[in-house]
Length: 399
Ligand SMILES: [Zn+2]
Image (cartoon, rainbow, N blue to C red; front, side, top):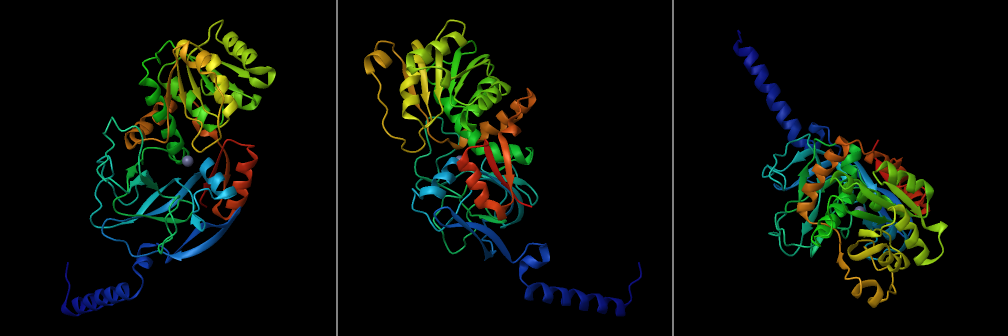
């Protein structure tokens, strides 16, 4: 190579020019990141507005994610209808995933110790407000305690804190996982699946859930269906699904249920319990998962369980009212072991990634859980569709 002094002068001039240009223009322009991001902000009950906010400078521990998609959750439906958490105005969306497009200089690894790089696909989990040392490896931690989640945070001056958006800023101190080895649909399903991984872990503490257990799953919305899929990936063969919708019951079978019971065909809890018993070939269930938010369903489920059996109640993420049971018949005289389950731990999150691979491996059609996909601009329609309960999982997929 032969560079004369005139060329060098020219090159130096050009480099200096570029440096000047780069520092004068917003940093984002040189990396293809826009100056602003759209967010879907819930500004009133049943009303999202698409707003634009500047993408801020990142701190040394922050990550900027280009959002690819986000599931619409039951919690979003509650917020949309009633704002029970008093968050309006709020950028919702907590079942999201996207690609790292920029990160602070201190960011090297995810919460499980996996390296993080530009281009990696990530999901977030909890942000611990009280104790940042609650680790995913704390087996004794039953649930998450005081923690925040992106998509359910009060609005702040950055605004990019929910997944119903084009970009989101994951701030230092959050939990983030590199899930580049999972597809978009699978990544959107991580959060709801973690709820069930936790529930099954809770169920296992009873010592009643075994390979040859007869297990009844009541409620075949996304939560019940994922429950069935997890039981199948664990090698549990004998699963009866209970629901009132034939379509959902058929899907339950695709997810691995061996038989189904439509409660609409029975009058009263005793008769329904007879239906469950018939579905198991003349036996009551060894173990039951209650996956509906209906107090009547909670009261009924004890009748499906054999003496010495177990129950995991996970249907009441929020207060759904009181249920009436008979403590003598339903619990004491049958010596039923009951556990409650709520949300998940970080450890459950990591387990969920493996579950999703196993489910795919044995051919369970988990991706069929996502029945409707909407662009961000149609987020109001997405929520209305969700409220109609026509589909299973509704997702926002960024165009
Ligand atoms: Zn959720």
